[in-house]
Image (cartoon, rainbow, N blue to C red; front, side):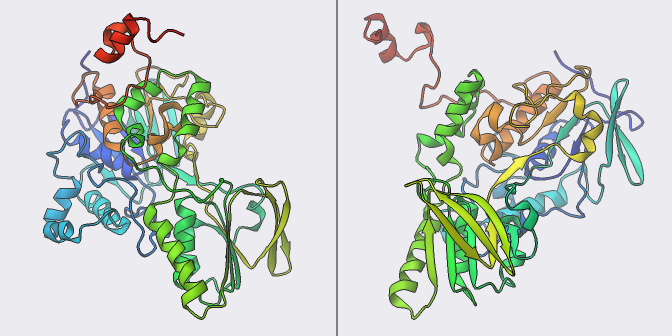
Length: 450
């Protein structure tokens, strides 16, 4: 069914977006090809800025630059990463640099360039409250309000701080989202970094590159080891529409198991980061006159943290052998990840939105939240489907495809081709008629029976 949209400025917007991060920026780009949709996106910050606290020297993307805001579904868009390179007269220089992974600073500049040019973005406008009445949403901000028939939430994830660390947050105990502004002035002799993923690795790499007054560095992780991201071709199939389609058909426990099994396709360390850290440790130990004592401790789980005068005392359980250890630190950096949460502006709608056991909104296949309001007024959620849609949902990889899916759902027709590719892997159990020839033959011969 094709949906008719209002065109008059006096009518409500067809859709309003709260938050302008990469996900809603992608959606805004795709809306340019759908002029019948009236959209507007609101952001409390004065301008676009993508993870500024994590932009340390040398950090890289963990996904291909072709997985940008638009290319996977609209490669002719003027807002592609390649278009950005051409517009800035650096395409050939970029190609000749032969990057194995794109510098994150470059991708951040690309995103900011798009945010500066695409229509329908309103920065410096914080949505204070959202109310639903009759057939629309009312978005209130300091100097007015906007009305919209549908909403899309793109406020991203918030830094996750474990309960044991919350009482101590400050200048010498902070989340890695603040690392760039805090590390250079830290001046701590003993530093503990908590978290063995890519973010923790980037903090450790930065500290090792410029130890300053640091004498002891301890890096702890709950994982069995400091493990690399699984960036091989078959593993990367989880970042594909066909995998999402198969994942959506799983039951709750099956989804949890699939998510756990694919964790290192997303949350592992880049090989370049591992090499840089290991080689720097080698140099400090064997090649340079250094007094730095660096310790890498996997299989550790922090039980408790205490303030001890001007320092910290961390009680840690070693999951490898069951022992209890005590760590002393002058500063603690928490590379403990991020969690999605609904923006405060939706507080008045909170009891009408269904959440899962992880505190995430329950999403339908088309990324609409399950809520008690009218079906004609939909609440879309970006970057909130880690448990409902799979591990790729919190990454850049399927950002453009997800935006295309939302556009199609809003229009009620397939404006964008969002159908899965012909995948290399058969994820779900197929009927005999849909099986590849080799499997079908074996099935017919009884070879697949137990």
